[in-house]
Image 1 (tube, helix red, strand yellow):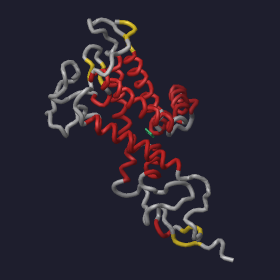
Image 2 (cartoon, helix red, strand yellow):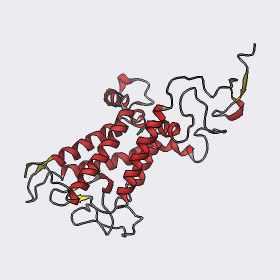
Image 3 (cartoon, helix red, strand yellow):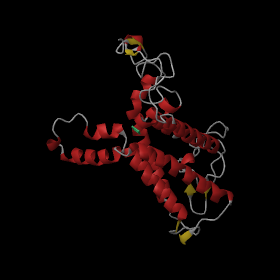
Length: 274
Ligand code: FES
């Protein structure tokens, strides 16, 4: 009997590793392909929507209420409409340059290097591997030990950038409590903007790097009570990191769509005050 025989396989260390010699592609009989398929469709749809919106260069600001979509924040090109640019307009209006050209690359990096999204797109897009106990779709696999994937290890720095961008998004949400006359105002758009910002903070703070920054490398929690408390809070969020990753994709798209709809005049904001 050679049931325990092995053959060269793929793994982080290449052919030096070996795996069970089974001829079937996988012994799994459940619908293991469903999760990667849903991920593929969900992420694919979101990236398509976001790309179209970012290069639309239109319908991103509602001047009357100061609603700015997060996809265009901060607005930095010559094209930025009156009142939408908080930090000036240092960038030219070339169509390939998004209005938020300084922040979008960092946000993209933050999500691309996120531990959860890595799992998601490695499985759904690269089939590497598509699921547990299902063979890798590629002949070789070097993990994150070489260029370019070794840069995934810089996730912590993208986290720092994301924190700054979350502050900017928060400010956008605060200054949107405005009526057309200039005083305090409050409408459905504010709830959507605020909800999005709260979820963005929850996602950002639930980051694995954040958890390590707050509580990592400590020998005695008792000697660092503040860091321990923060770490405990972050840890509670951290167990929901995957859900928050998806929820924030939803709130970002909803916020952007709502601002676009108002800006394009498809319907009016539901106002409670002002
Ligand atoms: Fe997902 Fe850091 S691990 S954002």
